[in-house]
Each structure stands twice: as structure tokens, then as C-alpha cells.
Length: 387
Ligand code: SF4
Image (cartoon, rainbow, N blue to C red; front, side, top):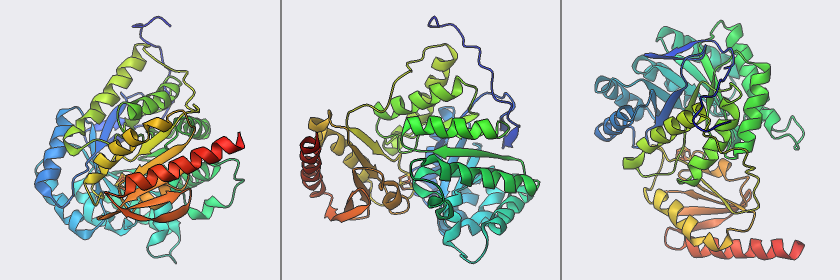
């Protein structure tokens, strides 16, 4: 395809889902979203970041709510911005009724619903969420994440198909929402590996071409690598008509968050004009560093700096096919580092180091890099011995 020529993309026939003042699906322009990384109860800082993202062209801004304190702050935040707002419900799904009056969309993760009220079937919890969403004019997102798949599906499928549990979870939630008569929802299936993001979304869309998809590569990491990983996945999906909204998740400091929107818009414009750089096989035999984009759950702001230092310190290992994951908090950090060769997740004063799913200990922010380096050296020498 000649560069600069507009691609003729036939989009999947997804249904329309309105989120505040915009609509996704049914051929509407692909929307670009981001998420705040400030403490949600710091109202001034959160409003400032929402406004910066809105000014950068965000169609919607997501806010994490873990605590009744965060939920209470939302009413004030709503009053101070015109932006379309979404809320990220984590374990505490029952906060939905407190936050829904102030936002346009609720995101829940099927893999987190079991944490509270363990005896209550997930179907009842989803019925509750759909009722709250209907009463308050909210859309829903069923957000499935590779690092926190519903445990009920984890052991049910052969290990050689790691996407199957994610798909099973997403499909059953769609089916149940449809049965409840609530169709104002979209789905996301995120992984930190772009190729898996491509595969899982293609498989989902084959079975449910009617459900709008929110695309993204989770923990894509620092720019420019994080943008490149996301671009690889989005080019492959959007050019096939898959995807109705997206987020580029980057590990950047709070003042640079609008770069996520700029990156998303640029990728869309490039795809639209045939300026694509695929096919890139991301299964490269090189060092892969993934890091989360940070959000209000980060407990020590040294996290972003640490992610940058990890990249610098490990440069010498760039020709080795190993994955290092750096995560900002204890909510998703422990689970989402399991698949990495070496994982770091950050607490308020310490950084926890893991090798695969095995915890090696916790270290101060000053001591973690030399310890990481010695573990990396060990892995490299083991790799070399087995060659
Ligand atoms: S790992 Fe924690 S800090 Fe990072 S984006 Fe996920 S929830 Fe937020």
C-alpha cells in the first residue's frame, strides 16, 4: 500500500454503546481514552490531570476507585470537569452504586469479583452492576486482564492455550449481560504481549463481532518501546476492522500522561493513511521490559524512575530473550509479574523481587537494582549453559 493513501477498512458490525457524550461501535470513530495516575482523593491533582487529558483530546478519562474515600471524592471531581468519566472498580465492586451517579461508564474485572462476598455467585454481582449502570445511565466495560483471570477458569483449560481462560470469562459475561437485557457494554482483553493481544481479540471478535472492543496492551511500558508494542497490536487489529476504542498505556510521570492520548491519535492517523510498520514479530529474541502505566494505586512515586533505571541498568542484556516486569502496586503487581522471568512490584518502602512466580524477597529502592542485576546475570548464564 502506498504511504499516505487512506486505507479502506470495513469495521466489524458492533452495536452502538453510548458513553456520556460520545458513542463507540456501529461505525463511530474509534475513541481514545486514558486513565488518571493521581491519588483519586487528591481532588485538585485529579481534576488537573483529567483536564490535561481532556485538552489533549481524550474522549473519556478513567479513574481508579478502591476505597469509599475515593468514591466520595468523585462527586467533587464530577462538578469540576466536563470530561466523560469512567470508573475502574477493583475488588470492591459494591462501590458501584456510590460512584455511578457521577460517571458515564463502570469498568469491572471478572477476575476480581470473587474477592468480596465469596458465597455470592458472580452472576448476582453482575446483575447488581447492570442494574446500577441502568439506573444511572452508565455503560459497562467487562475488562479481562491476563494477570487476573477469573480463577474458576484458570485450571479448566490446557496450559498450552493461555488465551482460552480469558476468552471463556469474557464470553460468559457477555452472555449473562445479554440474558439480563443489558447490552450497553464493551469488552477488553488485555495482555502485555502484543501478539497475544492480537490473537485473543481476533478470537473474541470471531465469536462476538457485535460486541464493541476496547483495545490496549497492558503494561506496555516506557516510551518509545511501549508505543511500539501498542502500535503493533493496534495495526493488526484495526486494519481487520476490530476495535472501537483504545488506550495506549505508558509508564510516564503524571505531567506526561497526555502523551498517551497523542500516541493513540497518532497510531490511528497512521493506520488510516497506510503508514503501518507491521508485520513485526514481537517474539524477538531480545530483552523485553514491561511496566505498568501507573495509576492512583501507586504507593511510591519512585516507581516511574525505577522503571527507567531498570531499562538503563539492563541494557547490557538486550540480546537475551528474557522478560522483566516492573509494576507499581500490590493490587496487580504480584499476579501480573508471574509470567515474567524477573518481576518487580513496588510497595511504599520496598520493592518485591520475583523470579517467575517465586518471591525472592523485598529490597529497598536503593538496593533493588544490584540485586536485579545479579539475578539477571544468573539467568543469562543458565540460558547460555542450555544452548
Ligand atoms: S499495577 Fe497497580 S499501579 Fe500499575 S496500573 Fe496496575 S493497578 Fe495501577
